[in-house]
Length: 399
Figure 1 (cartoon, one colour):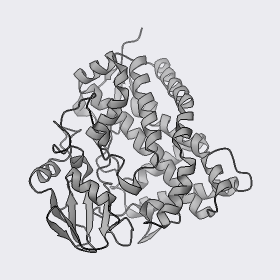
Figure 2 (cartoon, rainbow, N blue to C red):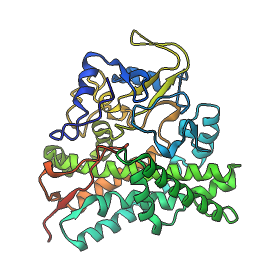
Figure 3 (tube, rainbow, N blue to C red):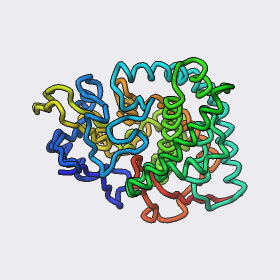
Figure 4 (cartoon, rainbow, N blue to C red):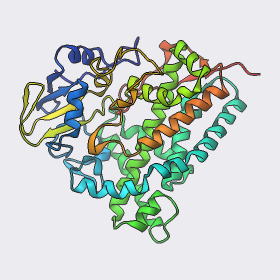
């Protein structure tokens, strides 16, 4: 079988039905790849954690086969990763970059950003109120807030946001041709290379400036790292903000509970991350470096394993009533939406902060927020590496 990615339009928040069926009947199954390779698909939570934490499974591009029609062009060309693309490197190369970035991406630094994130969010909510309903929440709220935050964190001029958002959309769109995606990736790389060259003589007080000052990274490595952080920092969080609001508006009993008690914010964020699991076509993959037994099956050296995250985060063996959105759920934080092991998402704390602030302030400012069109008319981003909505028209009663 091939990787199931198509979700039921009538149930846009649920994993593909085939993924759920496999998890319940055959949680480790053979998977056919576009290049002819036959690997494995994991849909159980415990098995997924084992693979992601086991150093016998590699993230290297030259060892893995892609379950998608084309590779993510932003990671590198052919089987060679772009310089500094640490997310497709094993230790010790991965550890070298990770340590440098951990020093810049500290929890304390993320928390110091909170007042600025609050101000950015308030400014966009003010603009929404001034414009009046209806508005597209993606363009008015979900996309610009994380974009502005990551630009300030990295030291990227926000006035260029339209350029990098447009190019990113093409680069991660799996319906785009290889040529289109490659051109978009090249434009983004050229943009960041120029930015790094301009910062090198006079490092600025931001994350990129800190890396220039405190590391021996080359311009090529800085370019790749900055580009990876910029894309990850706005693309995934923007999708979670918009899709999370769509899910809440589609579950009025949960939204009413949240409006009545915003102390649920932390657990609500974790539950939405688990329930929605936006990394679907871009699910984690690993290549076995040795023969490994997993759930009674022998995975042979050289075989690629795909983690079906949307099914994994709905595993009933780990989460009770997993297909139910429950904002007060105990244990929701154990989801694997940010991955697991040494490659767990570096920016997860920033994403959590942005979602906590964004959801809370949005529904405090607009307590009567609702969809401006029937839910069935909301167009989903099926062909993107990260799942989400293309537009989210919302409305409210003005005072």
